[in-house]
Image (cartoon, rainbow, N blue to C red; front, side):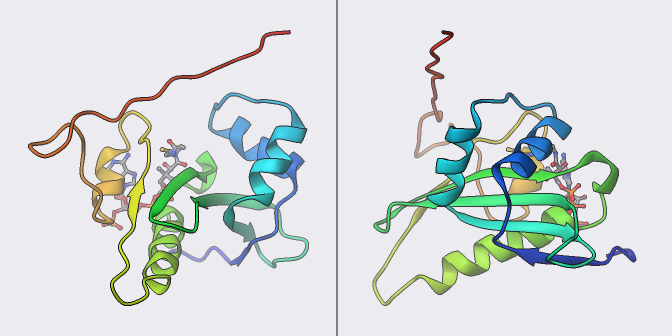
Length: 147
Ligand SMILES: CC(C)(COP(=O)(O)OP(=O)(O)OC[C@H]1O[C@@H](n2cnc3c(N)ncnc32)[C@H](O)[C@@H]1OP(=O)(O)O)[C@@H](O)C(=O)NCCC(=O)NCCS
């Protein structure tokens, strides 16, 4: 990786999280919803420089039901830092953590919804596209209260 100095922490505020989402053009929602989501997931936040005062430049989250279901969400590197290996750092940390949770006989199904054009990024870490011979397409639906 280039000469970017960074630190990885699980600490990110809802406001900082929204700034990262905004930086990659993703939709926003109430801070209360962001706060709850952050509280209930494993977080890898890359801060530029040091972990205390450095500004967030990357993020990855893992939601785990503590059973076999895991979901990777919000893998973000802000545009001016993309292409420097930080996305790889995030994914390697997340995948490393997942492997560490594998007790004897355990198995996890880890899913994610790739943004358009990012499929090959995730393939580098062992993820396969759906549909395929064994599985139908992944599906999703947004529910929204516009009030
Ligand atoms: C996807 C994203 C996280 C990648 O982060 P990044 O820091 O630019 O990625 P890296 O520099 O660590 O690249 C890691 C590897 O993936 C490859 N790669 C990165 N983006 C890719 C893409 N869109 N398609 C194919 N390969 C890609 C790199 O070439 C690199 O390969 P290598 O390590 O074998 O040399 C970043 O582009 C991003 O935040 N995009 C906007 C938000 C988004 O769409 N996130 C995905 C949500 S599902």
